[in-house]
Image 1: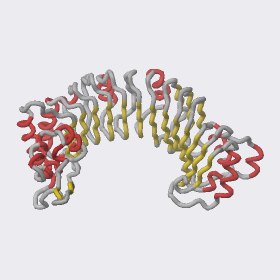
Image 2: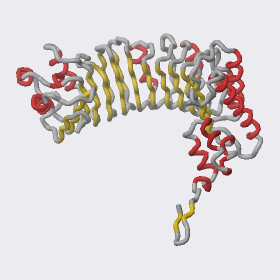
Image 3: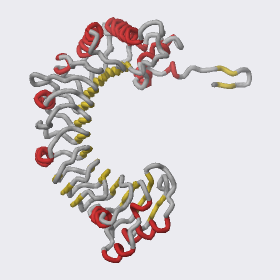
Image 4: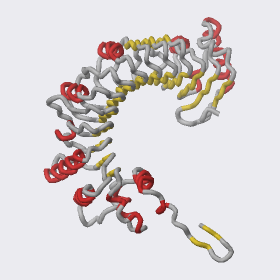
Length: 403
């Protein structure tokens, strides 16, 4: 708004932005809203069809006429958009950087829907995008995607993956498979075709027994609720000389996990069974663990700066006091954030404090929080135990939010 003595004038500054800035703003907005926004300004009237970022999701029931099946309207909308986009691609400086599609229904029972999705993806691959993010339930990934050599990012969710031969992803750096149905051979063929991959994310994927070779260029690895053995996991790290980040979560009981790596800097471990794990990571600086206090975890990390420990014990038992002392002594660092369910988890009886040395003598900063956001009821007793655990503390924060 520009004001002077005579009048007040409204100024449309957004429409004065160059195309590439408007397209950047559009990249955060689902495409269906861009089409609607085109009616707001003459300047935007044709920008929706030239945006390099195609983002098909958030197809809520309020978007379309309820008299027509929502699935049919969604398919028609995307198909019509792709048709217009094909025409736009004939103009200079028109390209597609990213294509994201999240359909909320299964494609298994509709051959017509599968055919249309095939057509969309064939067109997108011809445009050589950098990023592809697909959430298509019960849809088999087509061969054209497996040879999309321009991709640097590929994310697949709730899809069927069958890779009979080696894929071709010479530029791919990020691969995410979430709840994907596949098999070990297909996964091997997929990953083997990614010679410069840096980040691999596998979560809840139905891929059978996990057994694949990973490129030595990998820097970040996430294995969340996938089927594997501790023997395979042990042997993995010697083949990943550049790996800096590891995220591992399992509902399965695994024994004697050994993580030995000179390159790892950040590790996240999440156990829902009492497991044994040994970390030999001389360059580790950050560690996050979700476990029960009787999990046996040893850590050799002389450069460890911060530990985030989440204990989901309901309450202490006679033997768990000793287990908890041993666990804390193996996680001695400079700073710790500790999250618990109950105050009693951090209250050690006097006889335990007299019998055992302080488990965290080097700890300087400690923050304690509650899972459920409720207030602590035994702060005095807990404070005495914490000061015994870490006698060199310089700061101690206790509260629902750590304050």
